[in-house]
Image (cartoon, rainbow, N blue to C red; front, side):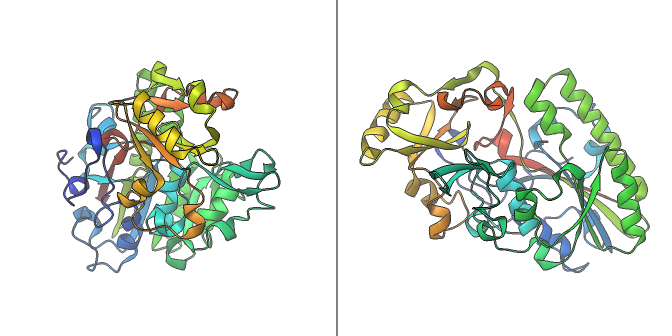
Length: 387
């Protein structure tokens, strides 16, 4: 594996207060990966690992939640992946699955596709509501009837090519699948052992590009942290990568990437204080990239309060400041702009900010988290090997 000065840190991205990182939208980042892999052999950009330059068939295996730092610290746990060519590239902002996978499959920055967070605001049956993108639900229930995925995200996936997506069968037909995999060909698996077999079948049918997605690393990190069970899951994933490599015919290559990394928060997650909650109508985003929606006429009041309460602990920024810092990869269209809150609260440490009004949700129990702008969340591995 490359040192921690791979393509993800070589594009001159800006740094925000406290070492927070802006994605490398001008170079090697998630949104540029699929277009690079779909380019003809010999015409692919030089930041790709060499094994991908001339491959006639490419399999892209996406490992949800496996950050570059976490992998680089566990070379003995994942010896196969650690031996592959490659290095880190950047995710997107926020470093959340909904936004990152959308950029990956759609080949564009969040500013272009508009899936600007794990949770964002929209108009629902009860007025302004918060959409949980992965579940495609609001407080009113299933949002597909009043917020159709094709309306909220109108771009085709994979450049309009019907790429086969080998993913968990449970995801088929979901709102988020419809939003970020529009036009793709769903090939569902029930147990992970089926993944390599399905990939082999698709390559045998002559598919030039296969997209495969596995979510186990992220699940274990959320539930148990970066300890023994995480290492066990990473070892199993390393074997999965070996199974994938064994399926490759001559002239094919496997690329491995992740959507984001992780930060172990544990007890460092705190609820927003009552004086902050009183100034908001709701919150959205992630616990590590929290958007606060202010009561009418109270934005400046809340901004001053937050900067006093979180001085030295969080980046407190208005919506205009966040967009102006280039975090979404460009200016937002009006619809996407309205999905954001008025003020962002992004921790500079390993903390996270919870809304006490959502205390009954499982989010409060997560051990590892992501969504923020730290190096541990932002850098993801891009690795490759050829048959």
